Image (cartoon, rainbow, N blue to C red):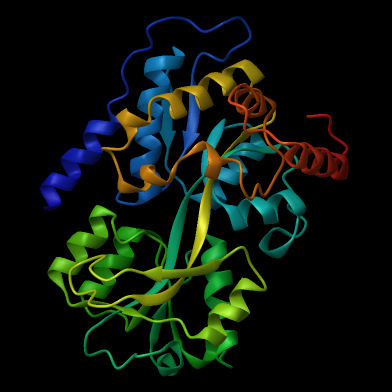
Amino acid sequence: MVVASIILVASFLVVPCASKEGPKGWPKSIAWGTASPGGTFYITTAAMSNVATKYVGIPFSNTPGGSAANINGIKEGTIDIAQIFTENTYMTFTGTGVYVGKQTKNIRHLFRFYNNPWWLQTVEGSGVATLRDAKGKRFSYPNPIFPIKEYVGNLLLEANGLTPSDVQVVKTASVGEQNRLLSAGGCDVQLQNLPPSTPSIQELARRIKLRVVPNTQAEIDFLTKRTTLTPYTMKKDSFPGCDKDTPTLAMYCNEVARAEVPDDLIYAVVRAVFEHLDELKPAHAVFAELTLKNAIEGAPAPFHAGAIKYYKEKGVWTKKLDASQKDMLAKIGAKK
């Protein structure tokens, strides 16, 4: 299964040559920010880059880094389009949470993508039935390149009357490292932010007795009042060993772009994605969630003008969305 997963990902990382030059004013290529190999960001961004290169007509390359690095790239102009968690997008646009004093005014929303489970995983026999049982145990959740994960982990502890000093905090720098750590018995419970359908999670569940630690109602209430996380149910058989429906949390991912990327280029990208979903769905199960109806919901930052043009063409742009757009732009003194 590991080999099959690698072949699948590799097939979507081969970016074909552009068939034509883009219009005047377009860059020669586009950098699309993703995350570390093995995760959903990585797989889905590679697939969308392929489709965009094929139908937009200029090369799209993938830049691994994760939400925090992608935000920095948007701000600094080294990344043009990126996949980011909505909480990151909201915080960096408003300059709140982990982004106090680090506002990114040029970040623009393209579409809401998939609802990504944020769940606690453990191994059978760890003694962790709820997060409260993690007191004194090894809890893996901080990631130095992904500050929102530590932010959420600390809130989960707080919801249980705990602090980081009450657990043995274990830091990891990537999804792969986190999975290897759990396999090797290097921690007792982890905060996971990959959908269970992701190949690396399916493979992990085949190697070890992977289990979901359910979120209590108190945790769910505490987190949903303070973040963009929403209640979620991890369905039975989501992975080998998941033997019942389990209450967890989830956070949407969204695609964003720099405000400076030409409107007609972003329009072409958004159109290519939505009009060629049949080519994207084989890459990952989460593409089934990408619909025009879902795409325009819950924007954590202003939409890019190029995306708005496409949504207006498709008849899904509303007066409510227009009012929200104007309000968010007014707060930063921008016209688009």
